[in-house]
Image (cartoon, rainbow, N blue to C red):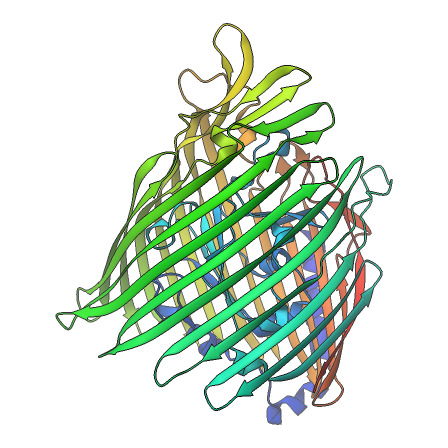
Amino acid sequence: MGKNTLIISVLAWIGATLSAHAQLLAQADLSQMSIEQLANVEITSVSKMAQPLSGAPAPVTVISHDDIIASGASQLAEMLRLAPNIEVMQTNPSHWIVASRGLNGNDAAQSFPNTLLVLVDGRSVYSPLFTGVYWDMQQVLPENIERIEVVSGPGGTLWGANAVNGVVNVVTRKASATQGGFLELTGGDHYSSATLQYGGAVGDDVRYRAYASTFYDRAFDRPSGADGHDGWSKPQGGFRIDWTPGADSVVFSGDIFGGTAAQLSAANQRFSGGNLMARWDHPLGDGDTLSLAAYYDQAHRASDDGGAFILNTYDFSAQHNFSLGGWNNIVWGLGDRIAQYRITAHLGGPTTLQFAPPGRTLNLFNLFAEDHIPVTDTVQLTLGLKLENDPFSGMSAMPSGRLAWQISSTDLLWGAISRSVRSPTPFDTDVQELLGSTLFIKGNPAFRPTSITAYEAGYRGNWSSDFSVSLTLFEDVYDDLRSIEPAPTVFLPLTWGNLISGDIHGVEASASLQVTDWWRLTGGITWQHADLKFDAGASTLLGIAQSGDDPHQYASLRSSMRLMDGLTFNADLREVGELPNPHVAGYAELNTQLNWRATDTLDFELSGFNLLHGRHLEYVSGSGDMVERSVVLRSRLRF
């Protein structure tokens, strides 16, 4: 923590010495919203209807477009470091561990972070095959992101299974916000990229954009100092069309990508895919709305040794928002998702990983409703329920109740009780791992969903136009977490069980301070503690640590300065406590970014990442590299 104090002091000294330049800002357009304006940003992830952040009865962080651009982050997982209620750990150039409120997995036990649901414009990118998210297959251009809404805690009532510990919803910008040409070129000692985009119009009610991008990320080093041989590259292209016939809104969008990631002492990983999405929003009058959405998504992943999978997903959803009796605000809807996949054997050293059957068609149907009931002028009760029919475990009910008390126009108290589940996947039920000719691990067809019941209480306040604060206390109670169990009498094959339970409790806190007209500080900290245990009859193989190797605390502090007209300086300091098992030392790291707007159409950016250490370890895994210091120079031209 001594380094944290030193860096904060240095940032304060820089701000003080540049105060003369800051006088220019009184007349300048900061192109940044005030803290008061940020509190009124409308979000949709908490209730599936637009509401101001200040009135949302949930622990939610909004990462704005300006914050993303100013951070210099290029990958979605890197952007999430800006949210103080999310754990982000990098293990090699293309692989990240991302979790909320613990359960970040343990590679040695084949346990992976699988309790965070990630959406891009409502399209789920959570894999129904292996659980979790393939972060190297998720790319959204920073230029095209409007905001990222990060909600910690269960979101199953609205978003369904696998929204166990949190929901990340990436909301992209309308095509009307990205008109004209855009060229970005980036070069650095580790990372280089190129992006070309153009947006235009057809008539008065159609706006569009199309883009193409590519990048190369150089390999990190292993802890031994040897080359990790795990660099990667990924070309991608896509489009968005916004059509506004009358009062309606119609959106078409799509992306296509391919990539290659090298691996030390293993075959290269090759991945490709694409998606097409359509959405229609129709006003019904008196504030009521009807929304229909559909998407198709394909993901293909293969290694040069022959292992591969292909997954085709078809999704349809409908949502109706309306008022009942002049005081109930109700949102309800239904959806159906069909996932068709086929997996071929994956050879990895002395083991063979295969699935029986090697392919399935999974159908996931859901029906949900949520009612927002004003109890008094200042108290609102929200009751919701989702019913979801999972192909492996049948029907699951995910209810929630939230009570919000608007103490004053600037202070909100809230409490919530909610339930969510993580559905079984083929990795839980169908996997077969051979060690030579011996069946070593076998899936469990009777594997049960993991469930969480969460108890939360929070406060959100805007104490002045320059200062806001948020505080959340949580107690998350888990049943049927995955364990590994031996076969009776003969020990092998091992199989997955549901014999770990317990709770994770903690505190999430964040605040924003507009120090001066030209300097803003934002930060947050999460404390968490896990009390997990084996249930009666469990083997206790691999220990409780198989559920996750989480720090007890992690914190961040962001400084944003406008040094003079056209020149900004940003610094992001993060501190992560030690990981218990496998042990990883705690660390503090610093990213900085200096941006110069040379003209109205041209700007340059110099970014430094992980500046406090030449290299450091963030997570132990089979591909666990040392994350290295790096520098990037980026230019952006708008035409």
